[in-house]
Image 1 (tube, helix red, strand yellow):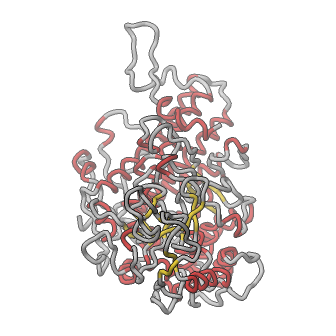
Image 2: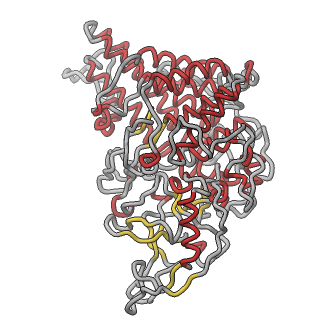
Length: 609
């Protein structure tokens, strides 16, 4: 079972290849290619490291989504302002010493290395054991190529100097260093940055090889986390869209849509598909398996190998606090009980962008059900004005706001969470917004603990989607529009939107967009967005993939940083407004880490740093 082998990955790949003869002993931190791998099982153990590395703290283990991208995309505001790296991310003004790009760079290249080791080990196995099953070896190779393509795509989108455009425009700019083999000495690690064109060529080649090697393979449920032909083709289609190769994108993505056997989840399943339920569902194309087992500590910081992450520790919501044994709090805003160690909550502008239009102001009134003299989160003295609560509930039932608002967020006083894994209590505003009527104060729901307390469990329980079919639909819509077929593009935008409203995805409906400039929920008169408000393609990618780590790439490739900065205005964890204008020479590109500049004599820094 691949998902149960994660915890052994790095240990196995570093097994020593020592002989019994004490005179001929190999290095203890590496295996000997003359003796390992000898079997397909040995090779599988090497492959596992390619998957396990996705849980590194620099990627999905902790820092990449909540601390880096959530701030950069202004998915969140942060109650904590003591981390300079967060502040730089929120202001989109990074320094070369920022720890988060550095961690991500290192983790992604570790993934590349692990994939290269697997590819090398497959060749070694055939030398050591010519009778080994070639078909199984090919399946291992297919997974390694698929994941290497994913790692390089992330590297290029974050650190490449520019996105390549139709006709190869920007292809001669700096991409990232390419390693296709395992360096054998220090000199071979000194690699210059390849061009953007060559970097994307390798990504495309990897995914093509992966699709060919994995063709027709259907994994059993115990190996559902493994890459497939359709994962590779989906990533290939994404690479074509990101490089504006519209013709190849249309062909590839249409193949995935028509032949993968995948379908969009119904809304009732989709609503709960980001919090530990409905794993490996009908929509999942490539998914990082997470096993909620912290083994005595916080995920990657547990001190023991495990397959957990702790992103939700920062996104955790709050419930209302209560009597602490000394001071009789009223059990409402200002005294909260957290389901983790929450530093982040939803930026108010996101609530508005989803179309929530009744405003944030409400009164706190006496709770008619209050009893006794010890107020608590279950027995508050004050509650939200029931009239406002009724309005808020009406917004949901009438769907006057995009229903994805409630997939992604939790509303104070309206939504509830299990603060102890058993008892439900109302969600509270973050402490920093307590008693402030001019803030929505919604909490994160997607990829957040809502039915357990992360301080008790110490790890996440949900899988992460590296690719799902809704993303493919939206990429196909974009590619169709780019290829001149606006009718097909509009229909696939509407399919994704219909699912969000609980409708049949294939039947025309009253909520359909009528044109590619039709009004979206982001046209909300409370704070209209001049870009996403009348751009269904942009809005649907933002709304559907909210907090999944892709919006930053869309902002950068579409060059809409100026409008994003103007729309969000400021982030409360920084003492300065967000960057008023985005510099093409800096803001859209992360810096090459200082550690890499200092150790790789052939590498060049991105402009502006």
